[in-house]
Image (cartoon, rainbow, N blue to C red; front, side, top):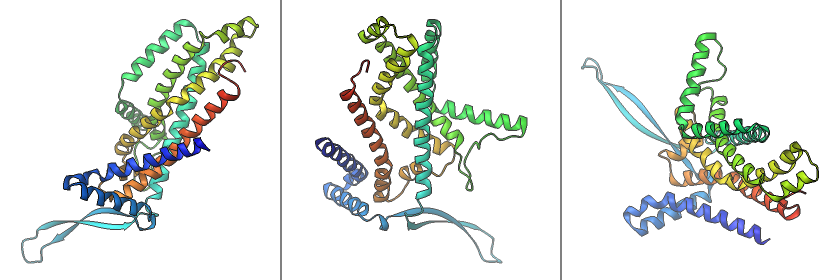
Length: 304
């Protein structure tokens, strides 16, 4: 019960931080303006059915004949109900987040298992490769994979995946693949560091003295413990996924939730969508940490 209350308190503090950050531009007019802005955001969050969004449009007007024909542009801003308009963008972004997270976990776990069983020379080459991959920016992976897809289409006439989103079709495969690259590399590096540390512990020597095979020790004990230790790095992995999502939605011209949050929209609507985006990620981190604590409480970190 105490842990539940503590987790609920942390969630409340996170929501409060989001509200205060989005209300902070009103500080330019003083504390009264900041307080009024924060209260307006809270009121909007408590009434999600009344939230709205802005759409900017541009129209043309022509001068009457027989005068010289001229063209004028008129900027308009149309306001509409946030729901259900935003739901498609929200579920698109969430599918990319959780899909890339699962893909990163699977790829890094498989790579970690291969590292355990590889030769010492391959282990050194692996660490070198990770160092090189870590030095490359996210944009490099995005443009490189997009160019490969376009080149493949020109050579074969087959489009393996959409290189960008359109108004009729959102790109899924390439954004999912690209957004998982950096988290996969990071988790792979973390697993390797924990594997090296775990391999030097006393219980590994004890397991070998009992006659357990190297594969059994590696898969059943070392990898299990390193995977559980990696749970502590989940917040950083999720933060990486979120920052990648901003870049990916922009470069793929995707209609996602990050473009809405970063755009010129009502503060209350942005705050509500940020909280809606944060909530499942918060539950994921808290659930994983809780499982890790229970595991060590019941079985311990060594041989079970």
